[in-house]
Image 1 (tube, rainbow, N blue to C red):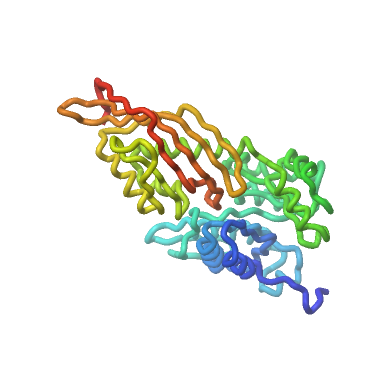
Image 2 (cartoon, rainbow, N blue to C red):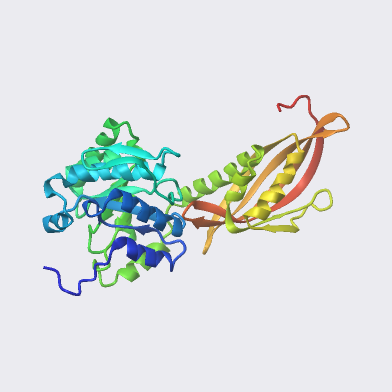
Length: 376
């Protein structure tokens, strides 16, 4: 029996409390027992928390193991697995919505006609991981989830669960490589070397309980001091830089503005008056308005020649060199107004990924040349 003062708060209420006091910390349950919740109510609670936290929520769910707990909620313990399968499907359908028609669902345990729930999750969906160390949990993760979180499993047993998850994903027509593996409560202590070994097993993350070690805080500090995933960071920053160029070329000014943090800063010159960055636009609205000035060109075509990225204490920085070809009408002719340019960037990691915190544009050379034909 649990003691009267056992500190087990409701997970979603606790995460809401934490969300209000943090800005970038990821939020996850581990494990939320699905049979204890009606999916319509849970869909709304989870989406609300996801929106309020800026898209930081990840649900780790399970079918439950304690018969008394499940039966106290009026659920048949023997059917909890099938019920959990159906609940995940209902959650995803409600988050996706179905326009004005709403969601119709008629399953073994739940009947919905035109059901709607708001708000919708920030990313359109809340990642759902399945907790458990049984083959049924692995199959559930492969068919319906975004990942698996087995507890206290290693070696051949872990490999078998991962294989079960992946084969179930393939059978369901899903991409097995898109599924994540979270390893929880495996070892009494996690240092950088052990974390690397767990990563080699396919772990996307390691879950520790506060009671795993009396010096947990010091462990986390040591892990955070170890540079990890530098190549992955550079790939993500390069993707951000190239995405910016493509969105500018497509004149998607909303998309360009969304690549900046909410208080992001764009500093640019006003050629031909100046070529050095001297005009500041702060915030997405101002950045969007400034970029829309490029609508004067018939087309814009970017090239990226070189990129250098470095980590900083609060994010990363980069220097990007390239060219922007602005195809313009002048005196009845089409000309290529080319800027040979340099970007000095500061990046910040957010729940949505890397974003520009500051981007300063310097134009080194301005060239004008003829153009034979332009696709409009």
